[in-house]
Each structure stands twice: as structure tokens, then as C-alpha cells.
Image 1 (tube, rainbow, N blue to C red):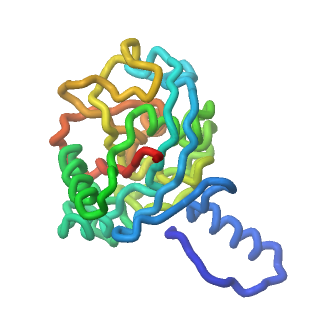
Image 2 (image 1 turned 60 degrees about the vertical axis):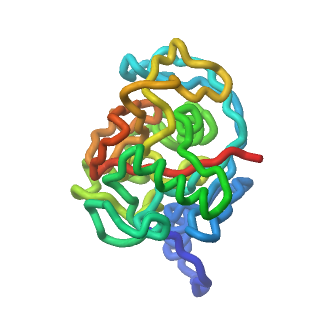
Image 3 (image 1 turned 90 degrees about the vertical axis):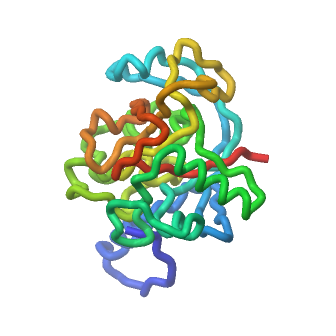
Length: 264
């Protein structure tokens, strides 16, 4: 479901009122106090995230070895895309569409590598004069967990709630879906669980050697990190602390990204 605007007719039945409220929630409307603004040239929407400190990694004791140790990380204020980059936004910048699931402009762009995302950002910055980038791994997890809260998934922890928040192997029907069709997390961000994996800035590294303040990951490596799980993954691999990795030139129909930039 995409975000809807307009005036609804006044109704008297409780059922219809509740349905309208649910529609607004699923469309990804931000919670009170979360600033949302739009890039004029692409239409890309961003949410302002207040920085802070949190325990990054496997805080529930059920993750893989590369999610440990859980460790304190502090991130500065930043802005992050409310949605995954869509096929329509990609086409506005790149003039083409590499996606496997070419079903409409509001579907997430996929079959893009980390390198492809960098080229997209380079072109976006050259025409906007800004410094758009991929979020760091620490920023991504902080934002996914609604500002570093103790959440197993993006915005929630209970497995039965997964259907309401994410497109994954059980409900996706073998395909991606338009962005914003499921409930947002506590910061008003959509699809940070499921739909497509999201490339982040970092090379894959060991948490034991990571820094505390605004960590950027290792300076070099063989694999870049992806977060969030996708339309064809099982619940365990959709957790907010779960880490996937692939060479930076890898392209799959489950790989996309969202854009971030630092606060001024």
C-alpha cells in the first residue's frame, strides 16, 4: 500500500473509522516528532534521526557469531530514507531500471550492487550538491531498532507481528512489493524488515575491533554488508542485528538500498 492523501468522507460506523486509522499506520506515517522532508528532484522522503548510544549486535543471545559481542555504539544525528530506493527514483537519476521485478515505480529497485549504489549516489550528489550516502552499519541498526531500542526486528520483537511489518518468504508470494505497504517502525521507517536487503556502507568486519563513536567499519575488505532480510528469507534472517555479506559487485533480485546523509 502506498501512502494516501486527501479528505475522507465522514462516517458514523466504528468499523470504517478503525479501517481508516489502520490504513494511515500501514502507509508509514511517522510518529509525532519525527521530521520528514522530501528531496525535490527525486521525490525521495527522509526522516530525521536523533543520535544516541545503544547496544549493537546480538542483544537477545540468539544470533550468529558475527553479531557478537553486543557492544555499545554511539551515532550522531543523521537522516535516512523513509523507504527503500524505488524503481521510479532510480530511473530519475540513472535513466534505466535494472530490476527483475519491474512491476511499477513504487517497487524497490533491486539487482543493484554496492558499486551500483555508489554510482547512483555520485550522480544524485553531482546534481543536488549534497552528500547523500549509504548509512553505516551502526546507523542502519540504530534506525531499524527505532532509535536503538531493544527490538528483535525493526519496530517489534514478537514473531506473530512479522506479518504486519514485513514482506518475507511466507507472505511475499515470490516477489518484492511496493514500498510502505507494511507498518513502519517507531521512527516511521518502512520495510527495514524484509522486502529487499539493504546495502550499507561498511566492509564486513569483526565487532570486537570496532570503535564506539560513529564506527565506519574496516578500511578495506572483500565483502560489503547488507541488512534487513528480503522477500525470500525466513524470519530468523530478518532480525535487526542479522548481517549478510556479499562482494560489492554482487547483484541479486533481493538486493536494494536506502539513502542517508549526515545532519548539518
